[in-house]
Length: 299
Ligand code: PMP
Image 1 (tube, helix red, strand yellow):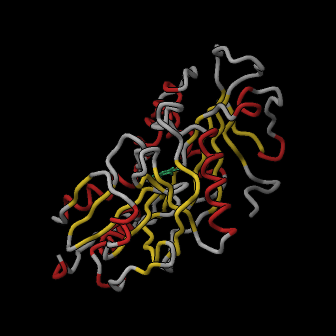
Image 2 (cartoon, rainbow, N blue to C red; image 1 turned 120 degrees about the horizontal axis):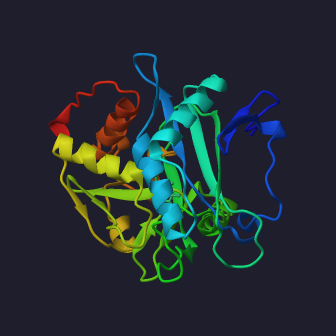
């Protein structure tokens, strides 16, 4: 995947520079210790033809909270970063894009706090998710990081070593993606997505505590509330999940994507006949600011 070419512009500490010419410090504490925080955001071309960053405030607020959690100085406002992001999109002529801000540390081989941080915002083309090919998921041999070892509510780069290991293991076994448990054996989340399941007309998702508080997860909760779909946040086991009518992952990059099976145990209800599919449709409409009128005879 080519993330940039000779013309690509990125935002770097208040300036717009060519990605191919941008420099960062090879002695950065971030490179050596996986100590930085980041976001994964999407922009969409709306039905009116405008470029809209979906949940921009929520994402940049979370970036600040992640930096605070890791004791990283953070001298930007959500407002100025949103403005910088729209400008970066414009300079790269992008509407449907993935947006990746990263806050990173200066040169520092010790573990002491820094007096400053740096920021880059990179954007690349990403079309809205179209197909709904269902995922084949496998239980990971890896657990999610223990919240007593990491500030797991922070979106820190170092945490993603766990995601990479789990995802590579799953793909190596011929599956599409992994599912990880928390340290107590409850279902936690995927390497880069939150999980929901549907059973007898109701949705369930792991309660917060041992997972990343996904912005898409929060959007799904909003959609359920608006459409009157019953939803419960609770801890549950993989065995419980295997009894579900339908399951889906959700995240900024993945959007809402259904599962075919977990450990080759298929979910019985045809995706088209699930409430989960209604949520997927509602989400697809919401990101492009298109009105959504569900046919709710299912609910
Ligand atoms: N969990 C993990 C571990 C993730 O990396 C992501 C992606 N940021 C999510 C959940 C979903 O979060 P969001 O909906 O905010 O993208």
